[in-house]
Image (cartoon, rainbow, N blue to C red):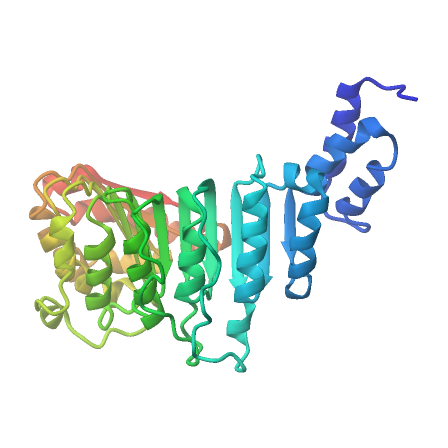
Length: 390
């Protein structure tokens, strides 16, 4: 017998789901709520199945359960899946075929990459591609071969954010270079995040993406983790292939020493000349791990090639000590000279990370350098400069 108003029941279940982690976990309490009364079942299921994590040994069972549990399909919003290439793509395909109304995020890791027993030969692609297409807010894929990547991308026509990490540090992994299907360009991706962009497997990803992406559909591109003095040609090739319509570009460097000086970096071999073809680019973000080494190199290879439309430049620094290095020559001279060539630049934003872990002395150093940095720049650039914490 239902003695409470449904709104009150829903509120009670929401509070159970939002409770801080404890023993027993909220999932066990939510499972108990489904048994209280029929009126408790829908709301409890909404929270119970909202985030699912599927381990490798359960991937086949998960795919089988989808056919018999409509309540699971109706309520799943986020899926984190770790499985082999065949079981993983089959599980994702089975879920998408049922058109879950709340699904917004999928994270898929090919766990066989972590085992040295995996063969280098790519598996054959056997799934028939149907006409159905799906929309997703976030798709994260790690350690997939190019065949599995193409198979998954063929299931979508709109992805808000696509994050790809080939995890190329495992030498026995090889990504197939081409998409296995001659498909028309059907996929609209708004944001692409590609890690380890210079890896051979990542370059295979780029070729697969070219066969799926609609022309000029990609508006934000993020390349994470590349060596400034070694990987610039790969970054330039990837940007040339994918970034023609990019409005925002972010480049993040590895934590390693630079073997080339800025004069060598200014050669055509290391220049990011593809930037000049990104006519819609208005925001460029550079993330450093060592300003003293990486900033002169980055300025020599990027800013001479930015299109006239660039209006915002953001520099992300790891610590107040790097802000101090930036505020003194020769880094500041390099920055001032580079920005002088950007006629339409409207904002220079310097972001300093890690404030939550700073000691009082580091906070004092930040305050001091925040005042000193604009004074070292020319008048026009100094007026556009803003230093912020992130």
